[in-house]
Length: 196
Length: 184
Image (tube, rainbow over all chains, first blue to last red; front, side, top):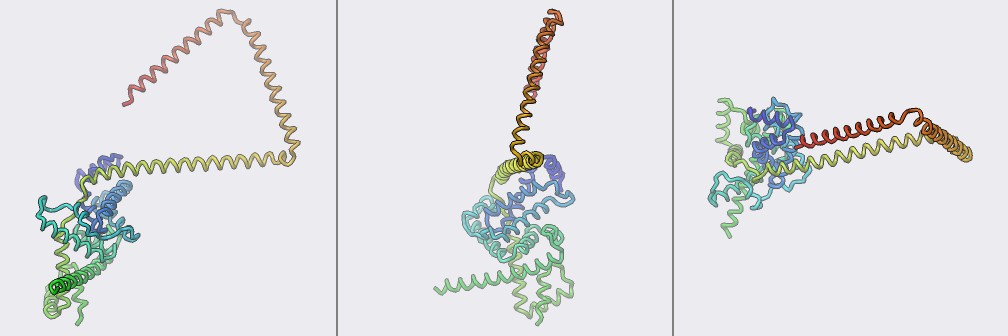
């Protein structure tokens, strides 16, 4: 934890709302990214990210400073998204062009082809993640986008290390299988198009 | 052919020993199914590794601040409602207990209404008599006290009272003024 982060946390505990806004500024990107990867929908992701910060703000007194703040935030976000997916409130995965307009491009002035490729990539990622059950999806996201260890994933998702291992094992097999289906589907579509 | 062992090696994150690595490579050369799994897994991992993190729309923090303000207001309304409800329940319970006690005490009267009427008349008569006595005492005091003290005493007492009132008024005004100055 950085010294600035500790200062902000101390200020938040004293009731300074502005200090929490600094933390929101600093961690909005990882939290939003996790929510989007989990829910696959920009509106739901925005709502989930806002809710995550709100829950963190309300329970800041229970935050253990020996833990990483961002891990704590991502844990709240994961649990919230898992609950939302279980309640089936989320219309998961949308390929609507307007939705992708909110996504930040890597290049500030991207070429149209780059934008299209990026959109396709994002859509492909979401379609792969959507086949996983909520907890497996959270484990995969924390592993691949945040580089978390099994222990960290276990702490974030309230799972044992062996449970994390078995979930990741199952999820990888599922992802590979889905990739195979998609590849075969694309090849078949291409063949149909060529023949016609 | 036993694929499970090799699948486990491919799906596991732990680094393989030289023996395991050799065994796996050997198997992959012969087994198309496991080779396919490896390729698919590598493709998925490459896709994940090359897909950038996403950012929320601009103004996320401002929207969060607005949401926090709304949440705080809603909580305050909710808290006030709860407090009012608790107060109402307490008052209601107090009234019920009072009614129960009163009902228990006056149950005899309720069973016999004529006795209740008689006791009420007796109570009013005693109150009326007591008020009359007090009035008479006050009248006697007003008639006798002015003669007991000389006129100068009354003038001085009146002046003292007026000065005290004036000082009290001035002090109150000063205090109020200083409080107003402290406010931002």
